[in-house]
Image 1: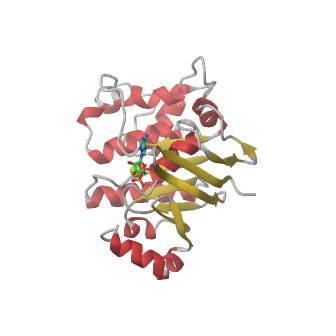
Image 2 (image 1 turned 90 degrees about the horizontal axis):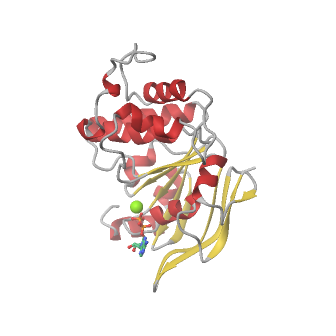
Length: 252
Ligand code: ADP
Ligand code: MG
């Protein structure tokens, strides 16, 4: 059974149809690439899956359950996490505290029984903290550093650490390479691949086809809210409609 089923999803903003009758599925353990030029509707699809906006039509099934009209916190609790295109963080909290937020129990989430262990695990797992003594070491840099001091790649790791801190079964990554240097792209690619190797299911959004080719198992191509192609990276790259849209979109 697919982990996620998106069926006939439609969303308009005024006269603009941002997502048009879109269907696709995500298999457990795979990385699905969702690509298309800017404005294609990729982030809107993530907003719909996370329940931050509601569709005009269609449904979303996660592990066979219809989550279409669930509130976001319930969708997160069910096992879906998302990393935003633009890093969001609490500027006055330390890097460690920013990650801890996803692990501490609160009135909505029952979270990890041991938030401290979970936070340290997420920090180490994402390479956010490279200090091997970090577990248990309050002098570690992540305990005093503010997110504003991190390079772009560090902010991406912070977002990833917070997302995996919720123990997601499905991880939605919105343009994780945006604004990164070549070296940082390689590092984050490695991290994404290693999460996949541990069984993490991922949907990876990018506007750049080349950026995702080496990471993904399958690709869905969106253009003006519509799916114009689906298949392996090789199949999609050969697709004439994709080639046309790709060139029209300035090589998106
Ligand atoms: P992508 O992530 O592929 O670049 P988006 O999903 O962000 O594209 O946007 C798809 C289209 O929907 C764009 O034309 C965008 O301007 C529009 N759009 C997205 N969110 C909203 C919104 N909340 N209100 C109005 N228009 C929106
Ligand atoms: Mg977007």
